[in-house]
Length: 315
Image (cartoon, rainbow, N blue to C red):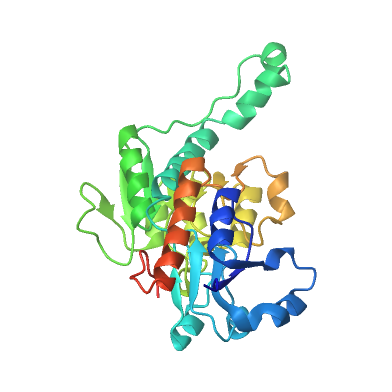
C-alpha cells in the first residue's frame, strides 16, 4: 500500500518523527536549501501538512499544493494557517487543544511569581557575591491579595484563574461576553478598564485579526507604572512597540513574555531592559505535554486517512 505524502514544515521531536516516517513519506521542507525547487519536486503528491502553531501554513504554500487534504497543527494556535484558503478548497485543519492547557497556565503563573519577586536577579545576587558584599537583595512586590486581570477566559485563561485563586487575588476578566462559568469574578468588557483594575494582566486569548494589538498603548498605559503584563498567548495580541516604549520609560512597571514578534529574532530593545522576563516560547515545553501534542497530531492524521472523524477539527 502506497504511503500518503506529508510535508513537514518544521522539526518535530524524534518520538513523533519515527512514527510519521513509518506511516507517511515525509518531506522535510525546513531542511531544503531551495524551498521553491523542493516544492516543485514534491508538491503534486503532498496530501497533508504537519506544522507548528507559530509556523502555520500560508495561502501561498497551500496554493502550491493541489492535492492537499489536511493541515495538522502541533499547538493550540492556528492563526498562522490561512483558514480561508483551507475552507475554500475543503482542506481540513486540526490543532492540539486541551493537552497543553495546564502547562501553559503553570508557566504564566510561574512567570508572574518569578518577575514579581525578582527571582532571576536574586539568584544572580547570590552567585556574583552581591549578597556577601552588598547585603540584602532589594525589596520586590507581593502577589497574594493583589488584583489580577485575565484577558480571554477560554481554556488557558480559566486554568490561570484556578491557580490565581490560591493567592487570594481579586480576579476580573474580559472576553467577548460574560461567561456563566466565571463564578466569583468580575466581568469587565473593555480591556482598558480591565487593565486599570489589574496589578497583573494576563493575556490568554486566541489570536486573530480581530485581536491584533488588543493590548494597545491605552491598555498598557492603564496598567501603569506599578503593573505587570504577562503574555502566554500570541505576540500579535500586543502592540510590541508600545510595550517597549512603556517599559523603557517606566510607564509600565514590568512584563513577563513567552512570545515575541519575529521570534526567535526578537527586538533587541528587549535585551537592554531589566524590567522584563524573557522566555523562549516554551509554555507547553514539558516532555509529557509535547508527547501528548504529537500523539494528537498523529491521531488526527491517521483518522483523516482512515476516513474517520477528526479528533480536534478546526475546519
